[in-house]
Length: 226
Image (cartoon, rainbow, N blue to C red; front, side):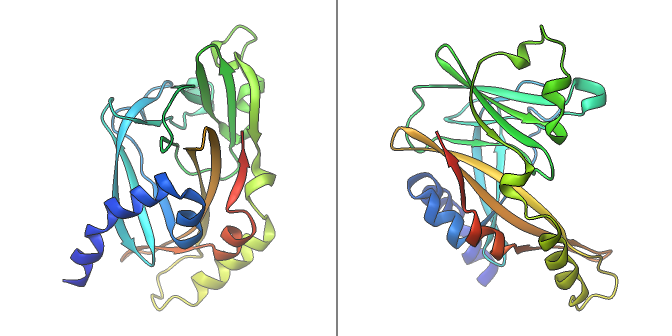
């Protein structure tokens, strides 16, 4: 009964993320699921977002479909697709618009302006864009925002936290936790805020558990704005 009650407040937390993103990321953790529509493509696009409770004050944002007022851009393999997934977001997008991508663990977020659009890009390992041929359209646009691994991860400090949480698990089959970072962009008062939701993933043969990387959230809840 309690789980179902908590599950119902997903839409409320999604609304809070739209209206007060800084407070939402400070109070709750958010995990971004993959997209059935875009995860096998280079080009992302519009979507709708479903928000469900996972436990431990963490919510899963799942993009679906190819229409809606929000946007999703995929991670793509550097070996197969050049390592840069992207989407176009109209510059006139309304306040409360959310732009999502999958977890970053060494990747970079690159945002550029091209005519009437913002180009949001997921740069695999932070190196893929520089490796694209000069004529590749995924290098186009005027650079406005670049977030590399040093802007959102705290290196060995995170690994220490991960090992500590993994070792205190009551499940003897648990492995040390893996830190994940979700860079969520929200249009707020005419600008884009890029927020960091730091999550610790603990996997075992029995279950998958999530905890918040609270230290990371306290230090860098807002990565930048533009």
